[in-house]
Image 1 (cartoon, rainbow, N blue to C red):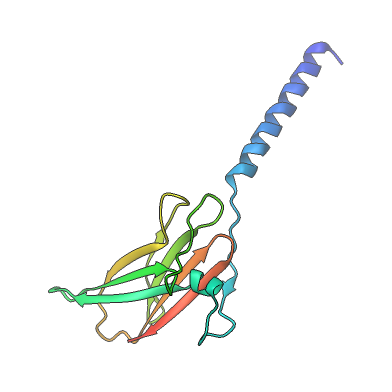
Image 2 (cartoon, rainbow, N blue to C red; image 1 turned 180 degrees about the horizontal axis):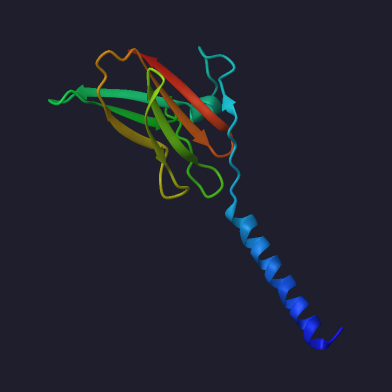
Length: 142
């Protein structure tokens, strides 16, 4: 093998390793398993930290109600650090999608809100995705 071919092959190998290392760094852990509290009547702190809390505000003049969703209940707030955060929150009205908010680690906290017309709606369901501990759901009956 000529010196030039050896250098070319070595250069390609180094470039491939660099691209592979960057790809590894860019892929955070994303757990998409649906999770439930062991005892819905008495969730433990770990479960409270992940369960969405749904708060309804007053209806405005146009008929929209502000629905606020925060992740964490009972004064326990879910962290938002580089390797552990809430990456999305979705809201459903009677199982129909209202919207989804995508959240970034460190710069955002697990909270969002939606203005929704709730006339005739029977249930609101909020889902929150923790990148490490799965998707947690809270359903509120109206």
